[in-house]
Length: 478
Ligand SMILES: Cc1cc2nc3c(=O)[nH]c(=O)nc-3n(C[C@H](O)[C@H](O)[C@H](O)COP(=O)(O)OP(=O)(O)OC[C@H]3O[C@@H](n4cnc5c(N)ncnc54)[C@H](O)[C@@H]3O)c2cc1C
Image 1 (tube, rainbow, N blue to C red):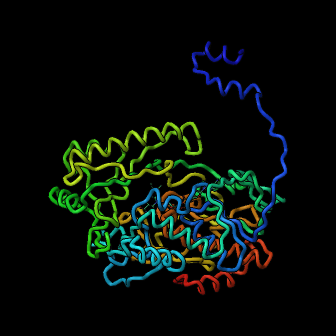
Image 2: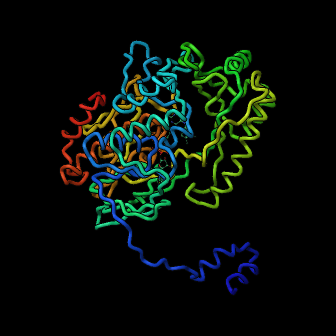
Image 3: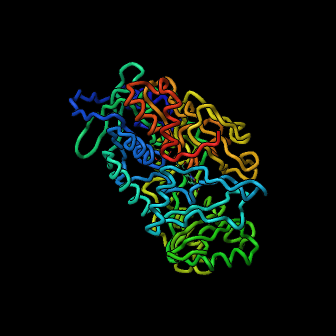
């Protein structure tokens, strides 16, 4: 009461919940015995990187568990993005440079499985905007969930969906176990090696790793828009001289169809472009089906990090308001979209970066744009989301080093995905889907090798990792 009174006197708004917490009003949880499950490798987070990590670990013979809070695998690749950037180098922007398929292995296998079920545009060549990416690889996000789920099971992964990772059991600087919560109760997953693919670095944070929360991107909830006509949308853009990106590929089982389209907002009718600007709507869309746009992104910059539950709640509501406004704009201004509707939204807002986890090496922007390779490369990568302003030199590739995936200060934890790389410009490259998938393959493989050798991530001989990755069709340029 005294604190509350002082706040009112000083003219501040006092949050009663904070006052109560400050008065030391806590509930002390009683200790509880948890059942233990034992594995060689535990992968936390079954998203873009985690799916590939778990398959890779299991294929190395490791007894592997995957812990995923949602009811399906996929993560942001099925909820946020448009096309998967990028399996290729930026060859089209650099005359004379050879076309190179630089990410292969399990990520490419997923695309091949999707092709068989009509779940991807394939690697469709960009005919406009190829100074940004040379190809557009669009996916049917629902088929992606199914195909990857089946691949995990085929590989022998113990897939725990609807299971939240809630803590780490430490033995000095080694993780002994991960604590999980599901409707089957609280459990302890013991393992020799761990891979954090939770995007937010939850496992690393629970394990006491160093991290920051840069909050350097807007949050997004993308919509899938149904009952639309992409060919008419293209004509509309073209008639306003607005087309900036175009690719043709497989759509509804027919080749040569528009599968990617982006446009200059400012060239479009002012009611549309001003409305779009107000709700942070980006124009780029991809599709693998007639009558469907995937996705239209609504962006919102939050004042604080997206780890703040109460601020996230406000953002979730505001993004849903923006989604409704976006549909109104499409119906009103875009021919072929008069009866458009929201066919899907993400179960929660997406973010391009949550926590930034400190690793043994931090990939710099110079590493990316100079196309540097390392003596411990685990993959090659050639896409930059700031292109054409920034791109990898001469349409080449840079290497992601193994040391960039080792969580600093923890002996048996690797990290893959959007949680690595501090420099925002470098992160605009490393965080993209195909890079995350490649990192997943490397971390899963390395974790399995460490488990079989009973060693920490820093004791693993690079030659062993390289050999295992090459045997699994991972492509290297150094
Ligand atoms: C709006 C948006 C648009 C984008 N557009 C593109 C694009 O067009 N092309 C492109 O290449 N890239 C794009 N990106 C970037 C790319 O999609 C992401 O950086 C990448 O998918 C991240 O992969 P990840 O494996 O790090 O995380 P995710 O794919 O998000 O996987 C993390 C997984 O961990 C699970 N998880 C989290 N915490 C826990 C926990 N405590 N317990 C259990 N499970 C947990 C989550 O449910 C999720 O499945 C976009 C990103 C966003 C946000």
